[in-house]
Length: 400
Image 1 (cartoon, rainbow, N blue to C red):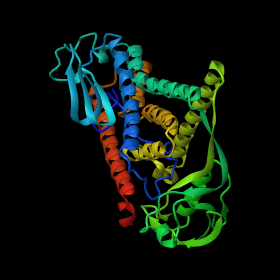
Image 2: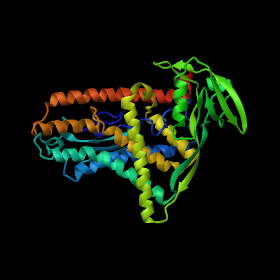
Image 3: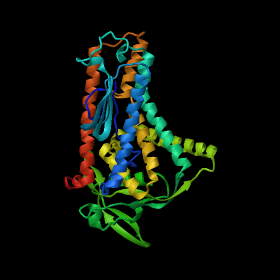
Image 4: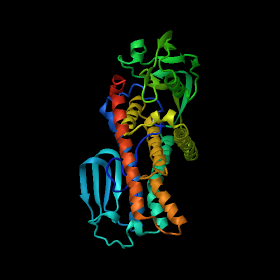
């Protein structure tokens, strides 16, 4: 079953990262401000709920079919709470960035014989498929429920875009800080790029900076009604030498909210928002696959996702609805990818088994592929956490 996120292979688990949809693809320019324990706690609660519902999906799909389960855990790291049920050990761990459902199929201390019909590996293709896909389906269902709740309470956000992009927190040690840029400035033009009032304005500015390492760019900035011209020269960074000046960006938009008048409109608004968010995540994945070199920098790990959620909670608590829905859709989309140690990877093996007329793939080969995939995921996960931490603390700029 799918590998867990930084918690060791146990059976079924989840991989939590963002393909750019949550963070906006480039908002980590100079790091998020993660001050404020309340906002961080809210973001962690969203992640804990996301991971919990994913694992609960796997768990319920298994136990309702009478399949043996030995452990159910939310989070990884030190155990905060543990309870031993009749067959299952339930635990809550300190870091809500992953989890797992453990099956006794390959446990050397398993009390069940290898031919027990209620072991997961001895179940039909249909039962195994149901258990594997249940986590993804649970996340997608929760995302829709969140959209439905948002539509019926605070309303669906509709941004009204204005020219330019807003600058967020800027440290004095960065290129942007030394050039005189300030938080709250509205960047209207960078080089020959006029920043139009549109959803993709942030990405266009980020790409403009990345594409011009070592070349001076003249920025036209609106500072409380005063137009300023500020030259900056992006520094080449990273393995690809792309430019960076150390800024965080946000769309220059006023958020309006559409509230439903009744149950029918609530449902329609929820469907519309759900389709929009799902399309955003799928588009991000498509761009990641087809344009890997230019988009790999937009992939963020759990640390950056927490920081993004904290930023949303501070700026607009109702924005947590959209954040929570996006995180759930992200988790579902990533885990359904046909990669070793993810839900999608196990579905590939089941599909191959079905094509072979029910003949199982060599167990040693399957374990080897999954172990290799898990090692790669572990490496990628640690790398993302280190990258996110350096960016958030500002050490990334100091090391450049």
